[in-house]
Length: 500
Ligand SMILES: Cc1cc2nc3c(=O)[nH]c(=O)nc-3n(C[C@H](O)[C@H](O)[C@H](O)COP(=O)(O)O)c2cc1C
Image (cartoon, rainbow, N blue to C red; front, side):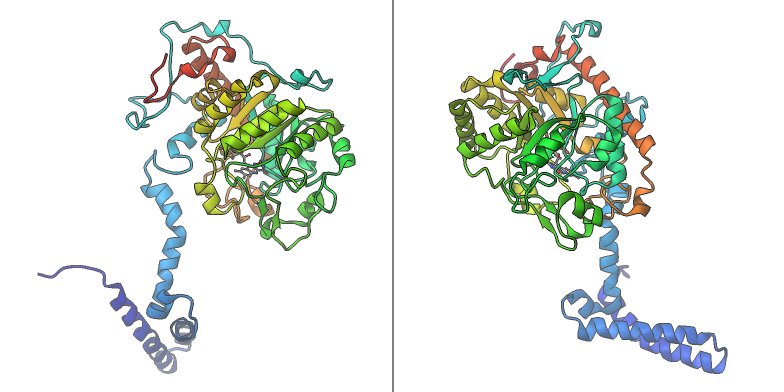
């Protein structure tokens, strides 16, 4: 019986033999019939040269050496594989980091369209999922207490900062993001009445243009507020902190996607402007150190927090991904010893995103949020200092349900970076580090940014927040809570953990 199968090696052999033969065929046709056949002669001649190079000269690619020009098909198909998988083959729930179901919900919220569904959830219910516990006696959401959180009140400082929605746009630098994305997010933040973290991109020129409330992030390289040697320039920080839109300072000790590693801005993304805002040269990858030069142990870290609080006169928090509980407890003990506390601690789950990071760090380093958060909360309670600061957190908290889970586990407010990227149209192309973002978010190419219309995307940010808040309050009421203050860990069902 004849069995149909594609024998690729055989096809490659035939192709490699046919190409030089076609030079002769077209050459003869050009000679005898029409000059125009010589276009084919030239074409196949060039193909033969390329094929010769692939098969006999270049050495790094075994496939090209063995199969010649046809081997390129493999690279061609591989290069469009992610798009094919995303659009044609991947199921609605299996993509990472966010499934289509998760992304679609953000898109709907940001486009302000009805997000009710029918027939049943597409998510799993049998794989140890954490769920919220509703109450048999939900409260009327009209009786909900409005949310309010004041940073800096514990220290009794003059410049406290109050938020009235529990959501924050998480750190993403101008550099990782292009101008249009920064301005869309910043304008959207202003419209929605929430703060935006600047990320570690230096002087927040574009954020300031949009006049939203800002949390200025000081990464380990201290872009925008550094001396040449990488230490803090107090005068620059004090000047920036005086800007009325800068409400808090975020000292980044580490982030979930690359804890223990400094930031990385690939050279492809360093424009002249970025090099000026950050104070770094062009044409070279910019690597931030893995820790602040001032912070070499718990004692010096707490001293540095104190220093930044004094210089900026603003609420100051620290951002970290939990690694060692022992080290974290030591840090808290040192805070007690020096009687110095940051105004908030910001816990970033290991599942957090990034503009660029080594894969091994993204995959294998740090503790995920829903494991880290209860540990941090417990240490703060054990040490008797939970009331000395606020706790905020992030790590794929893009839906109100997940946000409530985090708040029930101890967070006072939540933030998301990629939730807001999706709101402004991110399609999860996974090219943030290449300057080729097809929807113009993580790129500085003017042509690509042209697709990102600031006014339109800012509206989406605002819609996203509005609809998050709506669902958030509804869920809270169903849990029998009038306020986020009523949330306790028992309100979350964790499989295998018997309570409530
Ligand atoms: C494009 C991009 C750029 C980021 N830049 C920074 C940064 O400058 N500083 C920082 O602390 N975290 C940065 N992050 C991490 C986020 O602020 C956040 O901590 C992390 O992604 C978790 O939130 P998410 O899961 O909601 O995205 C970045 C993340 C992304 C996706």
